[in-house]
Amino acid sequence: MMKPLTILFPLAVATTALMNGCASPEPHYYTLAASPTGASTAGRASRTGGPLWIEVTPVRVPERLNRPQLVLRDGTSGGIKVFDTSRWTSPLPDELRDALSQQLQSSLDAVDFYQHGLSATQRAYRVTTEVVSLDADVGKQAAATITWSVRRLPDGKVLSGRTEKEVPAPGEVDGVVNAYREILAATAAEIAAGVQSLDR
Image (cartoon, rainbow, N blue to C red; front, side, top):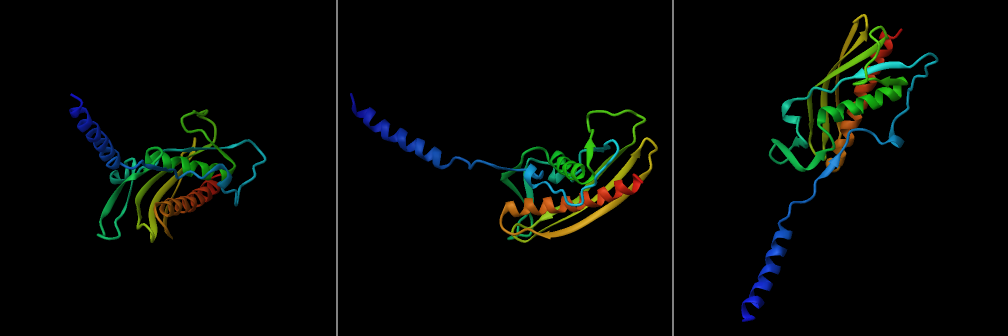
């Protein structure tokens, strides 16, 4: 009567080991926002009056990039590859918005009132951006074209620009994310210059 049990036990152990061996690897999560200690203060403006108010809206991105996984170029085939185990901590439009907001608040000594509301008569600057392209070859380079506009409220005066940048992306996916951060820092610097020209 014990013979079936002695056969089933090793079979169960082998099945469990096989299932564990086939388990998918845990995803690694990335963010475009800099750590508080790594936030740049270079060129930071110093304001003597009240705060400078900005409203940084979510960034529009191509639909192929609007997914949890990083979408990068496949260096072997020349095509596009979805990296299932490399994911953003939040939707990419929000990742981009948060990173730009962080950079602009730091460099302009500003306060982002996005989703918090502000008096209709208070001077403020609404920042809208759209990613035309955002591509990277892992271990090689990353490049982006980002259009942006700054609208001064309440009078509606607008200044628009276009940032095009290509930077090295050495290493693995971490290198790509760092390259994207560098591109966003350059974009934020150009937007900040636009805000300052409208604030004169």
